[in-house]
Image 1: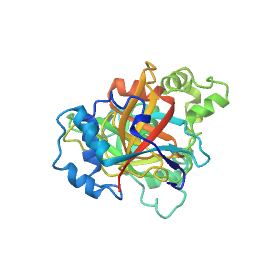
Image 2: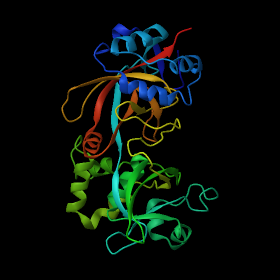
Image 3: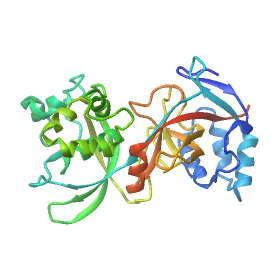
Amino acid sequence: MERLRARWVPAGFGELPGWGVDTLGEFYTALRQGCATPAPGWATLCGQLRNHTPSDNVAARRWLEDRLKVYRVESLDGEPTGLVTGYYEPLVAASRRPTDARRVPLYAPPADLATRKPWYTRQQADTLPEAQATLKGRELAWLEDPLDALVLQIQGSGRLRITEPDGSERLVRVAYAAHNEQPYKSIGRWLIDQGELKAGEASWPAIKDWARRNPRRLNEMLWQNPRLVFFREEPLPDPNQGPKGAQGVPLTPGRSVAVDPQSIPYGTPMWLDTTEPLSAKPLQRLVMAQDTGSAISGAVRADFFWGWGAEAEAQAGRMKQALRTWVLWPKG
């Protein structure tokens, strides 16, 4: 089976490293979320799932094995190995109005975004009066650190512990709304090219450390990425629920990944064979393709959603591992 950017090669469950070890309870949560907007060909199986609650892992695996077949994912030229990175949902302190400490805005889409293509670059938005005029009044919140704003833009969503004008605090979510249609450029790659960081060491902790040591070059670094992301604010009634991905369903920590939808359709179960970034332990588990991102392109390519909190940030910021992956697809 060929997709636009991938080839699916028939395989079997016996080919999946660690298949008999994975605990599938959290996966079924992600699968049920995905069935809210099922992939083509999945409607019947998703209907069956509504009345099915496996009693244990053995029953869960048997149910999947009886209904699904396995394909190994390769590039169009037959390469089975690719790359997995990680992402998470940041938590950032913010204010509804600017303060002496919080002067970095997060913006809703400007009114002229649809008529000016591409819109201004990040540098132009920071420096040109005409760009700043279109952004005036579009501020959703104000942050202290411009790197926190960049992290939110790269991750695509985040949580704000926001201080309102009356002094009260509440937790809200900012979700991706649009971008300026400028290309994404990695500031980590720029730091490597400048000789400021070594190849393989451009993690977010290393980038933040460089910024602290080089405050006068902060804008120079930020402006290397011309893409600017705009947000919409959403309530957060359940802090245990993840943000919505490109499939339109909430992401499940550790069980949702972002993919290239021209290689793997949203709503597809995937088996990952990789390692954890901090411990190098095997990371072999069943996940759901439920999101995408501008940097997620190609056949064997995934971005692993770690969730939120300090541990998720630490794992996601260092994840850049070799990956093999398989997809599970309904029989018949």
